[in-house]
Length: 256
Ligand SMILES: Nc1ncnc2c1ncn2[C@@H]1O[C@H](COP(=O)(O)OP(=O)(O)OP(=O)(O)O)[C@@H](O)[C@H]1O
Ligand SMILES: [Mg+2]
Image (cartoon, rainbow, N blue to C red; front, side):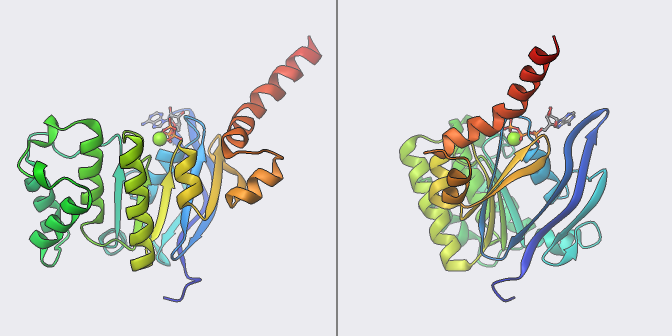
């Protein structure tokens, strides 16, 4: 694969849950080696998009290609090279940390699995917790175990859904540095959803702002801040999130 190869390609993807439209005509591409931030207000469609990229849910319409192949028809091959972590989805609660990671290492047929697990536990400062029951860990500890799981198979595509949401500032900083260093070392592609603008600034070379299930702004942090005349990404986020509501209110005021 050369650097400009497209790893993720969503084309006109739509996802309906009953009468609700979670993702609406979503199209974007991610090149190999990019770290892209998927941002947007609560309910914008970020997690739904990630779940579709993982094949956990099927789009109502549109197409998803990963590594140049159709996801639906090449699911196993694609998912072997992909992994995922979220601050909100936990591994089986009743297994020990080590057991959980071992099960996933077996599923992914990780070479030298035991060493890989030990290295990852060390990296995320969890070695002393290897024999603890996963469900008895704190939220931030479980999030870091999830990150170990997500890196077991040395994924070429890493999908992160708010990976630092439950982490204290010190651990969040360490996790950002680990992800950045691993990306540099391996050239993996990362899609990262976050409400933490420090994550976005530090990690993401490109940002996709989602609103009501579509991408409504795109660029690197500086470009987007310039485009919106804002001094911070936080300000841009708030402006984008509030714009349609303000427009609606103005319209209602004008017509009443
Ligand atoms: N299984 C489901 N059934 C019905 N509606 C759903 C389902 N999953 C998601 N939705 C709806 O789809 C929309 C998008 O949800 P999604 O979880 O993708 O948002 P998000 O951008 O990840 O938000 P957050 O920042 O809160 O995590 C929301 O309005 C949500 O209520
Ligand atoms: Mg979400």
